Image 1 (tube, rainbow, N blue to C red):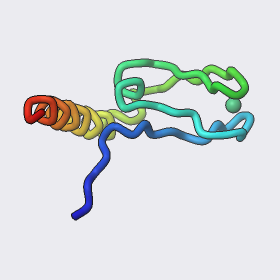
Image 2: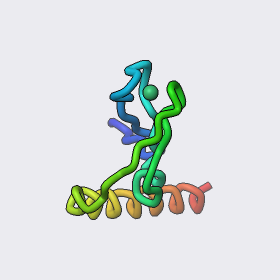
Image 3: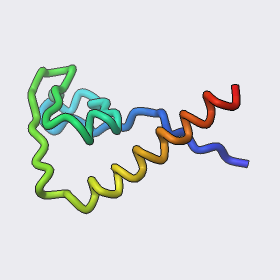
Image 4: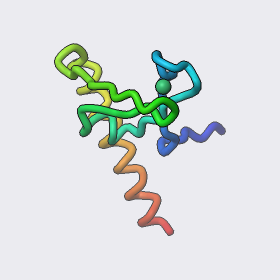
Length: 76
Ligand SMILES: [Zn+2]
């Protein structure tokens, strides 16, 4: 049985320096408006108005993963 990993941070490759993956947690993606490349310190602003349907799905996913965490803690 495969176990899904909800807590792994996702990331995007830096389009400026292409030196590596900029790690973005789901929380960062949802609640912050900008992120910084750790390799070249370029700051990126996220235009959320362009991707609202995606954000709504991510919000659902985020809530679901929080619920999973909560249940995991309860069962310990
Ligand atoms: Zn960069």
